[in-house]
Length: 263
Image 1: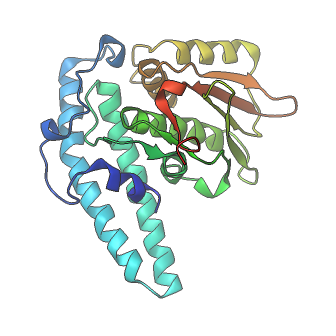
Image 2: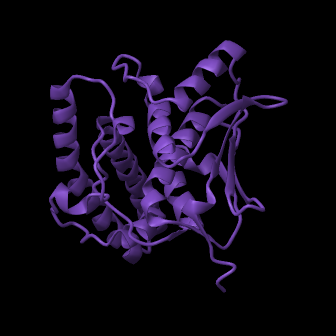
Image 3: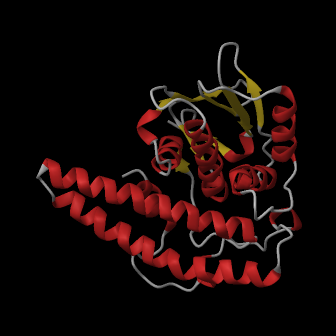
């Protein structure tokens, strides 16, 4: 599965119960990374997520080894299903850490190929088979931005697949600009949003909000707002000409390596 391409870059021992302090991203969370929820709840969420994370990674490692040796198509399909479920669990575990303002339990210390970043993002979406990817080849994402970009794209894809008909595709398109940036668009064929709701959603994306524990449907937007702001990325939603919404943002050239020029 795609997530193992990135796991190999993380440089951590699979299955090892490594303390969270060892695998920090290298900086303390800023004020923009934190949200106003009761401190006791933040502490509890962070501690539980840190305990659960290594167990999920061990589970994924075991499943991956079984996938590599399994030859029966039916059993392999069941392993892929378990793999997907564990990946979704890890996404939600890391989402809790993000919203609590805690550092990632994993890190990437060198550029990751764009195709691996996109693949990891798609694999963390429950309806990943509906995602159609069109991407430019020959680019990589710098290490410090890898997991932020994975989470950003994953949350937008999850939103698009959740609010569009199950028989439609969600298109993830990445193109390169003349300035060396990467332009990303995620388009769905859902019902879209009326102008007032669209304005509220864009406002939420532009500024990290105080978490509303009773409004779970907005948590994905909160994650997008947090990770996009700290990477200098502006995400916006717009209505399509026919049906649905398009989420668009630009990955700055500072976060991208054009490996075509180095070939």
